[in-house]
Image (tube, rainbow, N blue to C red; front, side, top):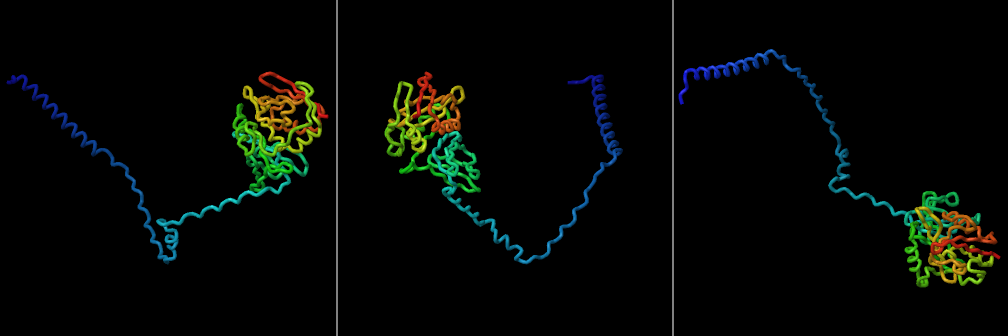
Length: 314
């Protein structure tokens, strides 16, 4: 392919322009480098020389041999904690109620004042001990930083017995407790009773379907043997709409005082003498006050129907 002289002229002119541009750029860069001041470089002073440690005797390094990081000795095993001992406080444990949610409580009598109280976990007892743990047959007290045991009081003339207990404070929690009671050695099948309960009750007379007469000696005997009394019945809080409305009864022992006064499994006790018993402490206070009553009215809910029972203490 041949180019005309006119085309060659324009090609040569373009090449010449490129060469001129490249040369001008190079010269400009060189001049700029000469005119720019040198950067301000600051150099830190050198660190002082490390002083040589003085010569030390071999005993100075003996700790390395003793510790021996490659064959270190095992740490000392902590000494086992001393097993708790029976408490020396003048107290008597009448009964316990064990809940899975940690809201367990117990009934403890101060033998010095002959007063029974309801105590929850962390409650102060006798002014010097704290309830640390509530178990099925005992309570662990903490006093002066040490654990002490308060065992369940044995019935008069017999061996210790278990007390009424609830597996949980939630509705429908009666079944686990009933199963635990039925598993006690010697308990009648299906009764939920445990050994050591009192004999057949004779001081109760039924006056009508909802009215009963009870000998005061029968009431006194029951209140004097509360741990035996608690083996004849089980009770757990009953809830409706998330609110406690009373206590549901179950595992009532046949021919017990509770059976004789007309209470039945599944009954929900709502009021005693017009006072609601939706709180364990209030229920215990009312229970202890029965000794001084001559007439007792109990409002219950049976098969979703309200019913009132009347008792004369004579």
